[in-house]
Length: 154
Image 1 (cartoon, rainbow, N blue to C red):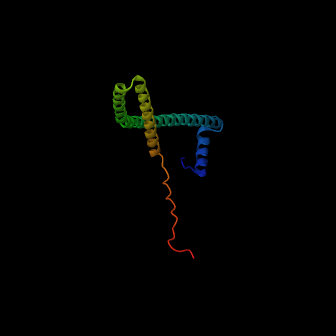
Image 2 (image 1 turned 90 degrees about the vertical axis):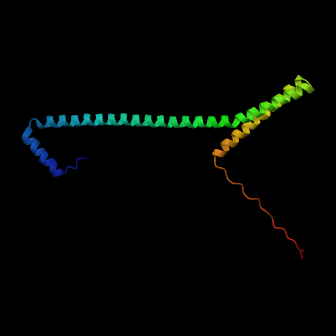
Image 3 (image 1 turned 120 degrees about the vertical axis):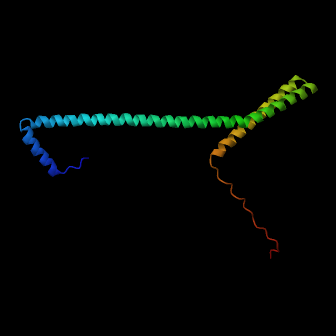
């Protein structure tokens, strides 16, 4: 830490023995040792608090990035599904109008239910496709083609 050699320690010890005296030297050494221990404890506590503050700041940044990503994904989902939803609602309305004119209310409800089921299936397909797009996929292996012989087998 301070790069002090043994020879320098001996010189400091001899000077302390002369200046302080042999009676008081053990008490002074104990007091210096306790002071150094308190100093190390305070430095450790400071380092721990500083590390906690850094960890908290990093977590805050990670949470902020996650929230931004979540907002982007929600916006993408809404932008993807809104046109499809509107188109399906238009088809459902036209089916209701057509079905109510031809048959009756029961057929209209069945048509609307089947269209709703198809819409949910399409949304699930699109979501599955979006999640598959984020994960790497293996390319399909080319189909094996057997060579054909065009000749006489003798």
